Image (cartoon, rainbow, N blue to C red; front, side, top):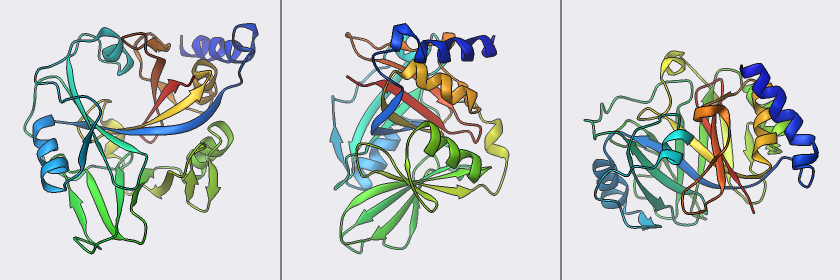
Length: 265
């Protein structure tokens, strides 16, 4: 079934239906972080760290959206989400809780697929330290002239993931760092030191996904599955987001982190 899907996506990616636009990444918008308890996470990011809220008001109750649940590969589940922004960065941090709130384990996020948020601050508060949120997600604090944020992702095979970043997604490489097209957001690849993360299903607390804006996400998904990624989205096909939103889907990289593709206008 998956081989048929890959072949169909590739055909659609280059055929008449999608001929008007080649698959291409044009920007990055959000880092999506799956959390156990949205309220506890907001207490940490907004209350303790002082990050500003962005977007819509925090939903007081669980939301029921079939397209969103299908996109995450958890049909029938409800969710809550909130967005915070890091000063000096266009990359937003979206916290997503699936199902009833759970007590965070507070254990460190295991490799591979562990994503570290590298937070550049102009002041010296907590500089040189690594903080952990309620789900064990690491935030490395660095004092710098310019504020902002970068991501570091642990992977099992840096060479293979780097090839996908460069050849399929069009990221610009600079050593172990990669700049996403359409902006200045940088992602670093680090060698994973364990294998436990491979057994953790998506979406589970502590796991993360990078939201990429792209043209022809069906064709791009075909190229990514050919490169070894698997489709998380139910039905293995882009879903139409609510309120006449764009089409979107999520794929999982072999090192256990996610890529969310959003159709760009």
